[in-house]
Image (cartoon, rainbow, N blue to C red; front, side, top):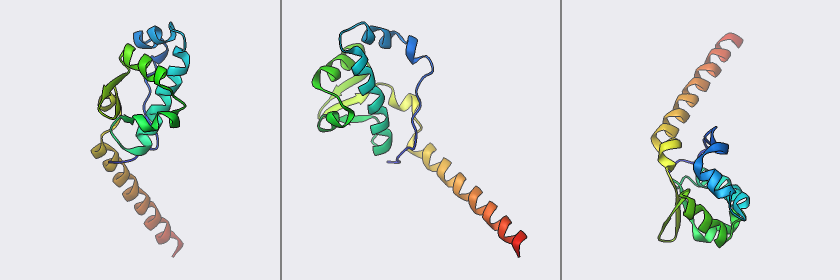
Length: 120
């Protein structure tokens, strides 16, 4: 699994019906922060949107946050933790990430080769 240096967040997060439902509940603002932190965690781990139950504290989350995220459909419960709903629809796949990395490496190598050629 490829590790991402960034993750995508929908520009309409503030008005998404799930966000609005979440923020209408006590503690929903904290749960939303946990959700955002979970995006970063999963991107950094390269685990395709899987949030292990044991890692919940790393995201400053508690069981109540996870329950709220499941209730509004932002996380899906699975054995051992949760999946971020629609992770694959919004985050680059391993193949995309690897292709982007390879393209960047080749471009950098070409720039360095060109610069070395000018300096000689």
